[in-house]
Length: 428
Image (cartoon, rainbow, N blue to C red):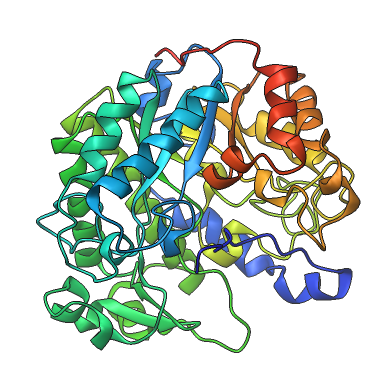
């Protein structure tokens, strides 16, 4: 499990696109599901009140799910885990970065002593076992000591990367409330359609907000799960109970995710106004063939239709403080061209007060089977050069820490040499 990849890099050939594109029914649902919200382009969140970064953002994701980046293996001693964590922070400094997205709730668990959820199995190899130290507290303190922002990265709904509830620690909330979970695609998820689930997820995250001097709460691209062929996400009971008043189930699902985003932002602000709230969605909101407002892409996944995440609306209405779309494709890639998506996201963010950073697929550099562009050490540097044309782009974030350190093909070195001549603090 040490090399779990972020999902959502699938693109469709013309024939497959027709099966994934939504009908006019979904477009109708979008017009009805936002009743009571501000009109498009009218920011409502803290972002609209001027809480913005003032200098270039240079980030990296530090993933813990499946021990992807850290710890290198479960079961290391506390001292060994701490040493590895500090080495990643030191690498960020050496690469002249200024922010780390540290995954602290990978699978309905915790990398801090949470009263709501068990200790993560990725620390000790046993879910619920105390590792003997506080990784989040240490990460915050040591990141700030090095002049780095620490963005605490939470996955809202993923419970386990297996489908057997009996493998969860006996006191796990998912075992105490089996009606909260949905098995899908070989994994377990909390049901986003249940208000009690949403409240619990927010409470679990707010514990870290209250207890630590984090700089931001960060979500990635997982809301409703990515589609799995032949699988059905069984939320029938919740739909029957809570779905009245919505045009269709898709509209209701989007409303569920909208509520999480709006409520999470509001609750963070009520606790600590200086803590920002950011999300790094899959890079395609909708294809233009599905919605004229979409990008000129032919992606096989569209966040609006497949993950029920209306990421464009979150930005246009200022519900979040920053957005980091995962633009994980090379320049010239016909189905989802980097040079198509950067201007699209720039136009979406323009005038909203929401900071825009671009997520960069460093992990693809030099990987066998990737297109030729990813075997060119200069590809990522060209991305940053291209994005600099757009004043809305305030920086970049690299997936992920292993590759930032390993520097495949020298691609990260090239980025630093060409674009990061000195360290820069983000400011605020």
